[in-house]
Every structure is written in C-alpha cells, then in structure tokens.
Length: 433
Image (cartoon, rainbow, N blue to C red; front, side, top):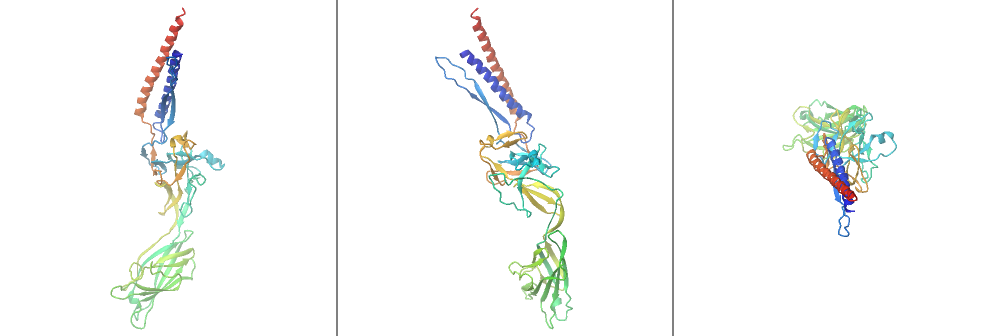
C-alpha cells in the first residue's frame, strides 16, 4: 500500500507540474497580447490518514486561476478609438456576429482594452470582432437616465461618418456705439443699419437686421433712439421695437439709462438681455445692462459695431471621433463644434477573478463574480478611460521563465520517484525467485 501510494503521488506530481507548465506556456505565448491576463497555477497537498504506523502518500492536486483583476501597463497608440481602462472596471463589448444577426439583445462581455475602428456599418469594432457598447445620447447631447443593474439600455456604438450637423443661433451679444451727435437738434436724423447673420434650425444662413433711428429734438439733445429689429426669414415683419435712452451725466455718460419696450420681448435690466422671436424660435439679444458700457453705448460721432458675438454654426461634416476619460464619445465636425453621441459605462463586479474567461481577452459575469453594476467612468469604485492607449499583457516573461525552470526540475524529480518505485516493485517481484 505504501509503495503504491508513492507511485500515485509521483503520477499526481507529474500531472500537477504539467498543468503548471501549460499555464506558463500560455502566459509566455500571450506575453505580447494586449489585455491578456496571466494564468496562475497553485498546488494543494492531499493528505491520507495514516493507520498501523504506516504512512500513505496523498500526492498533490493543482488548480488554475486567471488573474483578471491584475492590470497591465498602458502603451500609447495613434488611434483615437484605441481605449484602455486605467484602474478598476471593465468595458462592455459584444460579438459582432450577434449584432449582425439582429436577433435581439446581444450578450454583454467585458474587456479592459480594445482597438476599435468603424466597420462598413459604422460600428466601433475591434479586429477580434468585438463591438463597443454604450448608452446613446439624445439629439441635444445629453445622456438619459438608464438602468445601472442591467444591459437593457446599452446599444452598439455606431458612428455615421457621413453625418452632417449644425447648431441654431439662440443668442447674440451686441457691442455697438451710436453717434451722440445724431440726437442733437439740427442733426440729419439718418438711421444706422446693422445686419447680423444667424443660423436657423436647419443650418440655413439668415440675418437679423437692426435699425437705430435717432430722435432729433427741436432744441437741445434727446439722447434717445428707436431700435427696430426685423428677420430676413419673414421679410417686412418687425419682431421687436424698443426705445433706448442714454445717460449724459458726468459719471455714466454714454451708457444706457433705460429701455422701453414697444413690441417684442421685455428688456431685463438685471441681465441686459431681451428676447425676440425669429422664424425658428426665440432668440436672446444682449444689449448690455443699464449703467454699463459692455453693450450699447452712445459716444462721440461715429457709428461703430465694436463687438458682435453669437452662438450657432452652419452645417458641417464629421471629421473624427474620440472617447474622453469619462467615457463620453465625442464627434468632431469641420465647423469646430463637438457633439456627444454616446457614453461608455464602466462595469464593476465584487469578484472579477470569478468571471468566466473567453477568447479575445473577454470575460463573462458569473455567479462566482457577483452581480455587476454600470458606473460612470471615474465614479464610484471604477477608474477612468484612456484614449490613444492599449493595455499590455500582465505576463512577466522573466518570472515565467524562472517558474518554468522550477517546474522542469520538479517534473524531473517526480519522474525519478516513479522510476525508483518501479525499481522497488521489481525487487519485490524478484523475492519469489
């Protein structure tokens, strides 16, 4: 019994060390594989109770575990949609084969890095056939509230590289000087005209025309103007008319003293803004607060549009896509605007090492890993996302080669045990001769 147990222990030792060598071989083979998590083999002794003063060898048993929670070093790349997780958390991905079949919700897999580029359908897809998942944004770029304990809200990130977009003009800031001499008695009283281009809801160029007509008194100075606003989209229609009165005191000369509304939205003295309605909807005109010189002024004898600024852009073409550290996917257009189109969540689990490891460096949540939760990148227990980067393999080649030498020596020693037991059994068989 004791001799045969020694033989069994030697065989168990060979099997255990062969398992460890397989793990080492896998690690070394994937030392240059982005996102690879190394395998670790552990040995556990098997103890058999001794009876009658004899000892029976129990041998050894090996177990393996993939250390998914380990993180490799990040290496810079030139692709803006090469992304990697810095810290805890995982990226949600799905197989493109499941998405292309269109049979409903695809299964969410997890990864820590990926090199994603748009395919023929516009999906952000890696060479391994993994498609990035995210929450789609609303047309205004905001992200709706999605459930965080389910994948129901996740959609494949799809980029329309031929997309056009524009932003309507909703605000214009006026910095204009009106000639003070035009409100004096005997002045010509000619109106001063100003035309400002804006973009409507369809990205079409329109213009707001503003006419400043001075009030010429019989004697003295009136310091009063009538501001009339029209819209080129509705010719001949006045969308706002206001009476402007300027201060001529020594301390506040040339600044607005009061604004009276004839037609259009009321002037707000606290913000210096008034609201008119163009063909596409409401538009705010900021003419400056009362007593300040940051908007309309009445100085000297020159009509001068000093500074005019506005929001909105014409229709533009998409030029590139990037993912920021908080997981927002931004589309950049040649008009200079940026639009948020998706948000990539970060997935956390209580026991990442309990997930089921699949090919292409992807992992599947399991009962051993615990329930997952979808966080905003950089929030809660998760790290952030790094663009222009990939995560390297967690394999330490020098350490694996050292472990290989140890495994080889242990395997040879166990083989020697089997050889010795065989010789002892042979001697036992020879006793009968």
